[in-house]
Image (cartoon, rainbow, N blue to C red):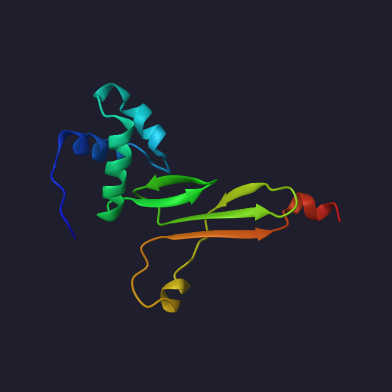
Length: 122
């Protein structure tokens, strides 16, 4: 893995990422460090580097990239009738490791179905 040099901007971003206890996007990170002189393009570039270094994980949520340093999975349940999208936190996903040759870093799952509210309308 190619090592990147340590810069003032990278240090600011790495420190700021530790502030977020859940998922965040580049714009939220930019707002958090707005007064520190780090531009949004630099944030996007350094987030990509942090993902490639394995320091954070990236996920897709509502067609946007979100990041996390402490969550190993990102799962949704989407109702096929009303389109409601809920984040879910499965208790166990370790069975996936038995199905995959290699190491699982993080998981993203989208589950489709009929929500309880729409199911009652039948």
